[in-house]
Picture 1 (cartoon, helix red, strand yellow):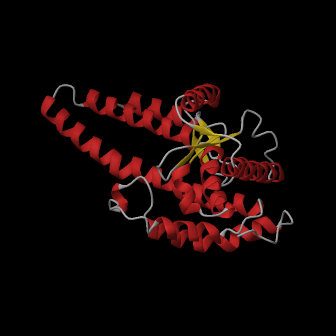
Picture 2 (cartoon, rainbow, N blue to C red; picture 1 turned 90 degrees about the horizontal axis):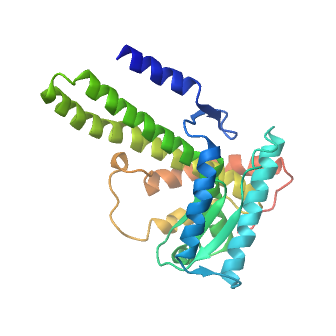
Length: 269
């Protein structure tokens, strides 16, 4: 067990990146040199098996907003000493016909917006709030961190099973307790932290891109009216709508102040 613990410690110490938006050290057990090619391939496969809308007003709006958000990211990163951070990114912005109110961004800047979310975003600024959030996940390497955390979770399970290998009863108890405890006590809070971090980074990006960050608050107010019963926050991978709205409201002034550093003082609603 001591050897396993030492191995885990060494892996963590030598497998970290720096989040350019928070300055914090983040898990990076799986390098982007492996993640990005996989992400690009999966994105291409997704596009080939779904209906991608092109050259419509809505599809053009998705591309336009996406380009503004990615440009804002480049400006922020360059100004804060991270020039070249996006060199391996291959930005792509696509609108896909799907009733789901959803959007996502794969590592490396591969973005999909579903048509089902457009009635909720309502405007270009509302769409910028969604895209800023999704792009933030990619910029902060949240996918890499989730994969890394999953590997550590699996390593912890192996270590526990080795420790109790001579006692099957205790081994079974460990597996049950570890499965629930690591999920509710570690993995879900980890995911909620990523969502809040992406909200905050996204707010800054949309402000630098010239969009009113208050539109993010209005977006989530509309989201909260969509209905459907959400699980308790402690059992969810996402913050509750109430938590999200409160956080966004508290960050609006900071996002506008950050945008002012780049000469942006007028914001599109």
